[in-house]
Length: 185
Image (cartoon, rainbow, N blue to C red):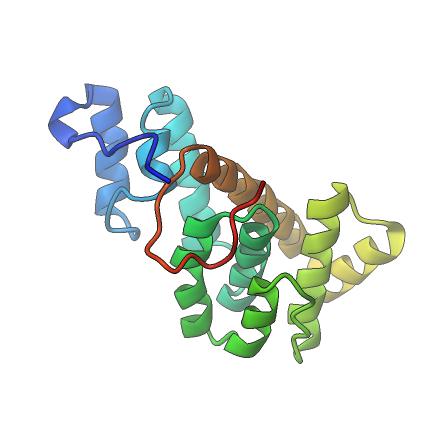
């Protein structure tokens, strides 16, 4: 697989693209990699809004790092987004997520997190990613465990990282070998 959207040198960007590039590169991400290289091709209003939403979710959101990263890795596995797993697995482990359940998730199974809230976040994430909704019991469990604000943030994380997964997959953004899991067909 080759990258369909090769990196654009900063000097070849127009002023609006350069402003988005600089905002990404100077922020906590530290560089324009993965989906952001692809997003630079969209109108600046879209690419900037996408990168700001992602920065808000990752760096100032209400979900703790462990729960957010479990949701992101669940999205990654659902859509076989190789780059997303490659980028976020180390973040999850650094945040304190047990690698053993993550390995079961990577293999496509129930991760069996021992922490009840972590397992709930995985279950809710799978339900939303598989069905696009939560039933009444799932909704109540999520609201009771997370509160309304964090539940809404979880849903936003799922949608945002699904967007990035589509961009990464269609853009064929490369990752080092071995890839985390087989390519989706």
